[in-house]
Amino acid sequence: MKTTHRIIACLIALICFSAQRAAADSPLTSTDFHQAYADEPIVAQIVQGRTPSDETWAYLAAPDNPVAVKMAIINKIGWAFEGKNSYQLFLSYLKRQGICKREKDLYQKRPGDLLLSAAYLKALDNYFNVEEAARMARQARKMHPDSYTVNIICALIEAQIAFDSDWGEVYRLTDAVRRNTTLKDDMNDEAKRIIFEYMDLYGSDD
Image (cartoon, rainbow, N blue to C red; front, side, top):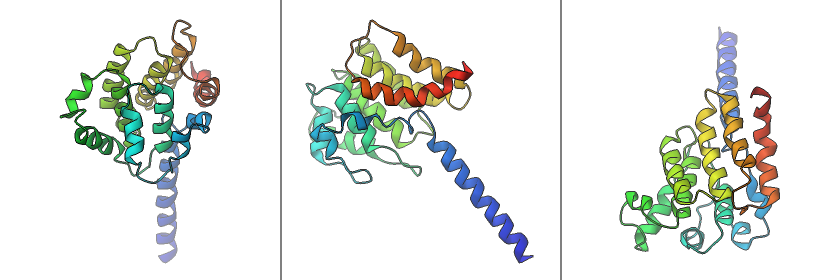
């Protein structure tokens, strides 16, 4: 009887471990393009697993900072299987600074990369449910339709939704950004390579 219980316990543990590994293999969790911006001091100072400083939030909120570096910061802040609260911390910072009084104010703020930062943080906080983050990212894309970075981050969030049902669509969403030669090239080539090294794995299902 004890042996049976041990076997059942081992099977449950294996299933849980496999589910965690599978969940960690996804468009949002497997594209560590922050490595391409490791020479940026603001990116280098991020310590994964630690709460970001106000200096980090200030960089994300500053309108003149490059959007690709902002996304690299968020990419390095990262995700956790059990969830994170980076979005709420960022929103609290914005409220303290008088940048936003309410969450919905983000939709009105320009430049749109402030909304994109919030969307990407929210998506990584809970990558099992990114519907609201996708809506935010799409609005940011409407504000900056010509930015490669804005488009690719939005596509990664949308691909996370498609991940559960259509792996061909996962590939097509980001590939469409790659193929759009009219976009402003505001992300470095190494970051793109890292993203598509993973996303191209879905191309065989297209």
